[in-house]
Length: 197
Image (cartoon, rainbow, N blue to C red; front, side, top):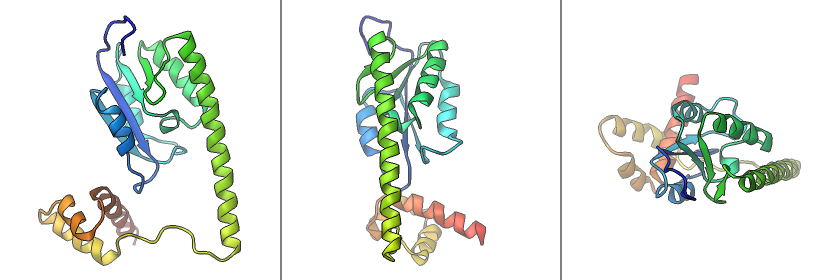
């Protein structure tokens, strides 16, 4: 970011996807050319604890630029976003929403940021309401909800064994006709299920 200011010490980006099935590719493509570091978290926006985000916040120093792709990738509400912006500004850290090119160090940028935060909160609330209504209607009709699992336990058990023996996620994912990201997330869930048995 320029506008005649001193270049930032570091440009650190935070990316978030809600589930393992969602891919951060769009965010990565949009941020990798303008950032020094990318930090990716897989968590719902409503999660109380966000370890990756909290680590990024601790690492930021005065003169750094904190970057996100979209407002709802980092914050649950406009209020949360504005409170965080105030804390960052108090620490001497600038903030950029890359997809909107919003510079929150200017009065105009802060106004636009406030409006966009409110709109994102409204959109999320509306989508949540529609999703709940759709799920209720589907259940009332007796429909099975949720995606069928891409990989079964036998495939995951075999993949887990092979990875332990040195095979790569990429190679096994190609054989199973899934992305390496999908395989990694499926194995994580598989391990959680095993631990609970």
